[in-house]
Length: 555
Image (cartoon, rainbow, N blue to C red; front, side, top):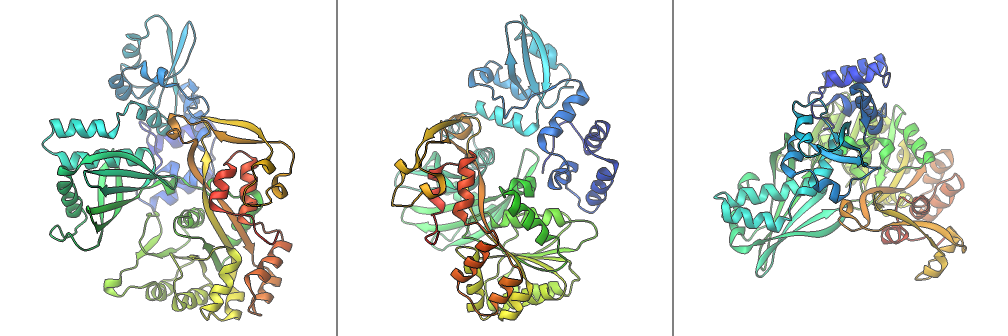
């Protein structure tokens, strides 16, 4: 949930109205939505509807307090600056040095009205005038992370001082995983120790090592919390667990499998990151954004998002749902599993033990008077047929589908024996996507290159970049990106808007090449071409693009 410490929803509303950052109508609509969506914040709604962005919100709050807004993303304090405020004081008052000169020092916080804030700071900076600024809570959190010691150091201290070794080690690992925005945590038994690795921005990196003698207790604790059998060490087990960390509820999926050196655990963290995503955050080009919005505003029809596991399909679908999730609309989903809770939506989880499959659940949903339906994945003909019939009878249906690219989805559905005339009548939009790492904005720099000189495997890159020198970008590597040069991910997209000509072609059982040839005539771009634009704009690197997509052979 998006929230700022020290400010209630009512205070945020008053601040934004007073500064004319939102209208009375915006506030009233937000309150209507929140009344039917307990647990959702006022800011969640404003951000999801793109009524205001985070920097504008920061400026509004700072303006209300009569102080400067300190954007910690564009002006990043150095490690030396952060370290000049003692850790205990920095965490107590949530303060960071933002700027200073010979006479003045600007110290920023997300709670400028704290009692005793100035007196506490004056003890350390008595020779300078102190000016207080305001920063967003999440940015302050990112700066305070710099005080954390490595996991191995903290493990050693826990083992030395604590009687609750397993619980405290697990908590430290989960806390770090959340801080570094890890999607998965791996506990990997080796011959002499247990390696802990985080998957961050799609790639695994080592985070620390646990002495092997403490691992059995850690496994048993995770099994108990996940409601798994602690006496079974030779079977694969799946479960789920929940933790409360810093007033945040963290839901996790747990998978345990036996290996030669012991039981390996992978924890998928189902955080609320996706709640911060709006359509504008997905990385869509202006034209693709327009096409997706127009298709999602239709009263009925089907939108399919394709791509392999881990390509961001769920995030895209939820960003769409968030925009359409209004008090007057009935949104119902069936998923396996429900990874993110969406306030105001009716979410159903597939349960094989009770014979609640996608097909049977979808059949029931259609009788529940829905306006918008999300089917987590179309896996078989029965689910496809029920979904298509739902889209045909006045419902807007979103789903994901495993296909390598957008045009391939149509022949695959036809191969599943979906009737061509039904598919042609309901399909509105096909979206294919992949995730690429974004260049770290805090250490990004430009360089002049000739792409043709770096061409490899005869990929004909000059067709997209030319053979002259051009400016590309990359990250040097800094503490913010863990010295990788990348921080965060964005998607590259391939969209096919299904028009009358493509509908006619579907009736003829076409190949993927025929569909793509027609789609290109109407402006569709390949995944690689969309990625090239992001490389040129400095969003990602050419190396990262080539890691997930290749130039099409037919262009």
